[in-house]
Image (tube, rainbow over all chains, first blue to last red; front, side, top):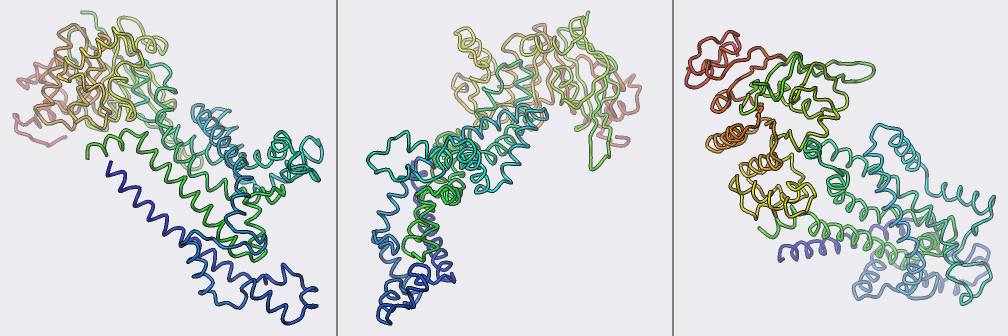
Length: 328
Length: 261
């Protein structure tokens, strides 16, 4: 038990270092951005009409003249106390904005994560089990095609087909335009989330399916499958293949969290879906340093948490680790 | 006595596609013949890596798909077709593979021996075969990685005899075992033969094979070059083929000469 505790503590230290590095990198990139927050947010014309005092006040608000090191350190000091600052664009605490956006995105992300995992696993096993035959070729071909398709392009394609031509699904946003928040039904929310969620799922499927297929092929080539056949065993796929593919599938599934979150940035942008991904884009383009750093750190923590969960689950599922740890 | 297994002029070949259009033909077994009688251990002795294992795989019809097989394999008087092998394997014919990698690393030993069946009869038999090879009931709860080399070998033997087979094919059952364990493992094969099964022992170790085998087939360059009663090796008389003589001379008690090997 102390073994696993030690493992977890080590991982948490690594996580702290990772978040520090990620936030610093994001900060430096943002600092190097040629976008002038004043011009982007206030507008060239309005800026020209302002008095020097007004401009100075705005510059102070956007932190234009504060040295970079000072800005980062003051952000870091706040972050360590749990205060991620106030969003410059939304004029609300960063945590509040992230919480609201995340709750909008969460359904999307979880749906896409579960669907791409389940579908990818099923397709990968099917392809691996029928290796070399037409089902395998079809699945592999489809996956290669999908993985070379940019997510935003796929999103546009789906929009054109389902929203413009067929007119069965809304063109964007999370709720109908002009409707009061209280009057929006769950069904309407689901209808709006459907296309973004499907797009995200599709882009995640191919990687999982292709990796699973390789693993299934490896397992089918193993000595123990040969032995199972030599012993006249039935249901080899269920008894041996699934069991041995389960572990790598678990790793893949949790590692795909990062891809899903990354994909959501583009997909939400295309569908104008007011989620975390879209907030990240507006924060980046609008020079909203506190919000961008907050989102970056939050998503990095989620991705890290996913990988940590996979590592910990491995210890529970894999008898070699579970019993090995118990013995040593 | 009528042989339980007879193999005549077996050949196994593979076509391998290399880069571009290049194609290579591999022919690890070209002309292999042997007989296994009930109540007898028949050994096939050949160098490591010479393709002997393919003989076992051909009998069980578990060769890779790109393998081509020619020749005659007869079990109990009738051709051993794929359909027949599929219905017999695990019941009348059983394989003892080389090592622990032939067990599913993610499944407990007991579940593997029982092959998914849970009836009390199977459970009892499982316990009995393990006990027969000196393995306690706790072995059922172990995963393959927890077995020592000798234990793994005994588990594999136990799994082969669960159903009381009439033909047992043991593929290199001794590498990695110390001499005492190896002799004991081979002793198990003799025991099985004494109970009436035919045992085909595929090995690279002539000396070990001679401790249990009734007949020895010598396998060289894809062919069986000699087929002799084991007794002939005791005296060294009547070994006609030069390779067989060289093998005999290489045995420790005969001077360990390696010329001509």
